[in-house]
Amino acid sequence: MKNYIKLLQQLLPIILFLFYATDTQAQISGCTDSLATNFNPHATINDGSCVYDTANVSPINSWPLPQTLNETSGLIIWNNKFWTHNDDTDNKIYALDTLNINNYSEYPLALSVNNDWEEISQDDDFIYIGDFGNNANGNRTNLKILRVDKISLLQNTPIIDTINFSYALQNDFSPAGNNNTNFDCEAFVVSGDSIYLFTKEWVSMKSSIYSLPKTPGNYSAKFISQYNVQGLITGATYYEDKKIVALSGYSQLLQPFILLLFDFHNRNFFSGNKRKVLLNLPFYQVEGIATKDGLNYFITNERFTHSFITTAAKIHRLNLSDYLSNYISTVSTTFNTINKTGEYYPYPNPATDYIHFKIPDIYDFRITVYNTHGQKIGLYENTSYEFKLNVSNYNRGLYYYVINSKDFDIMNGKFIVE
Image (cartoon, rainbow, N blue to C red; front, side):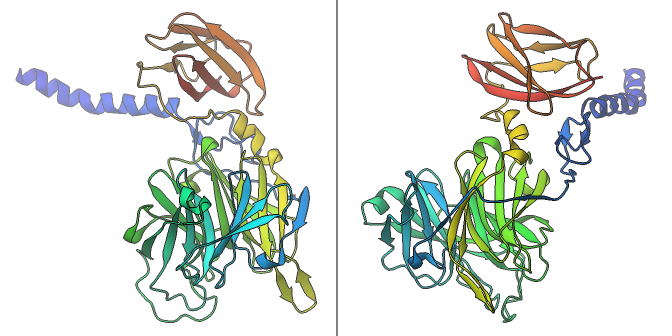
């Protein structure tokens, strides 16, 4: 027995080495976006390293906002309407007809004070309003998010509660002066049981992600990560079905942009692809951003006046299909792995001739294969729990597959042909 244990101890380093070497070969980290300048067709794990050429886009349409919304500061789409608000003293939110912007309704939030409302977000049951503008001195101690019950709002009897917070990394509350703090915020999204803040950092020109629960209470917002956005972030929207976050913002010279975050890990939104798209709207102070399909976006800008420049408050429609359609076409509508019915896997991966898909207890599933440009190159029906895919005629590179069946949710993955 002692000799057996001694032999096992001697072999253990070799076994571990072989295990990790095999795992490393099967999983290749790199840039997985074919639109990037450093795209790696062999990468199976996106490591967030993608680099992109400069991109810019012009609005498809632009419409003036009613004058009462000259200080518009956030935007969501709900109940077939645009919902927005002002960022200074006005304690109403506004619902605009999507077909006629000048047709709108006002919803007062009685007893609520607008210290500096900078963002609006939502989940199925509530609208969230961020009263956390902090650029005057960077030393607010009453940062909060208002949570408004949707049903009560439509009945003009809004039920409102409060989520109070501070930043875990802020220890100094001395007055910093106007636009001189890294603890300002104008953007957040709601996902799962949490709120995710994207800071507007006037000093560093970066943005940090903080998280806090979405239920009423007093919290210290937890720092998650930071990214050098080289600008000021003013709005956020999350198209969760496809894991896309879009941030609106502008540079110090008031050059507006949208920062697209996609193919990230869990809810660390800066861990995946980060593509900045400049907007052909010079000197527009963009504020709110919203989308319904992840490709078409609506943004608002507040009225801006400086010297000889004046821009009216407007809402604009943008189409970002050129930057996202390839990615969206290869992403399923859910991201659940199939532990309900057993193990599934493609093997070997990478492959040269055949790839095996095995799904125990499932005898009727379909596999669709896409190339990195989002083009469908194969659709395969299967009537057994195992399928053998001939890839000998495939070009070398990375491919995406989507598996669906009436018995389980849509799933997706990647494989490499060598």
